[in-house]
Image 1 (cartoon, rainbow, N blue to C red):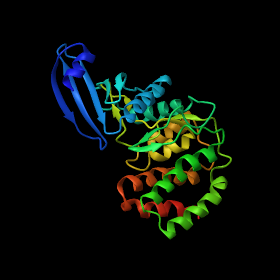
Image 2: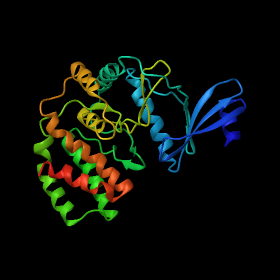
Image 3: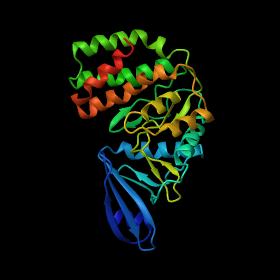
Length: 279
């Protein structure tokens, strides 16, 4: 691998340091003879290298939040600029909330994306683009995950009955809240952003698509809350439609179903709780 990297960098590597923090990728900090630093990732699934690179490039188009630059990508490796982390600036949460709102103002004509990608190691279906958000979200997010759960043996009679009832109610829950499809990070929790060398927010490890921005915000509340200042600053910059609090759990459900499929029955109770919120 070092030989391949040296051919890409056009110079010798003088150090390689493993970096933890990810559960589906091997990550390394690589330093070359000239002193340049690179972040190198390798996934078991070769497609993830391409889709993560494309997601980062899509987020960068909005030009509102720092995104690591893609240096190289192929079927076996993803190379990004290495960003040194520093202490957060004093008003970090306010800036982050406002900039995240600006990201969501970057829109598309349809819900979805030009390619399927991955949320964790689970395929995320984007290619079946739709103009109707409720249909897109139910079919490509909730129903897809539910069918995976069936294949994995996680669906009980209790879960089946609850999900069937949710399917009948989904248009009443989400319908009427549609906006233009916003550019979404897609998997934003506390481990998928960092602070750059200037103390400013930087987004990493996306699962990009164009969707309802409420879905992005709901995810931020699942695994490490971002703090009240983040949300109040977001609301000032780009107020959410009325009723967003009621819809929040249906957007959390996608990610908890995904965790059920990735990590097992420890997430079953939370899945049932989120479904029953609407039943």
